Image (cartoon, rainbow, N blue to C red; front, side, top):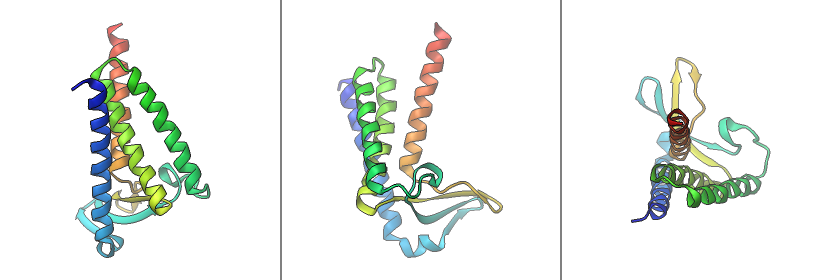
Length: 153
């Protein structure tokens, strides 16, 4: 399998994992809306985010946010095609899959399904989903790779 195929397989896997987790959350919406405590500091709580990260831009139409995200995905695909290292291709695939997961939600529901709720006392981190985890991990991996490129130079 060449690295570009691997990148697209990773993207599709991330997209499918994200959508499966959201389908499970939505199938259990009655329980999730009340919140399910997994352990102190972590609940499963179903929310719909109509904005972007941390709820910013809540009044921007869903289709505009979806189009912006789709443009970013196309840019990331170009970067993935040009990437020389398999690690970069895989990291970009993870980001692309996560971004596509949230785009699918915007198209289907007009907003993103979030359900992972971490907190300390009454202070809550904004709820998020696995697509967000994939984007953050992929970007973190790309930054890590870039730091090591610079260190070797």
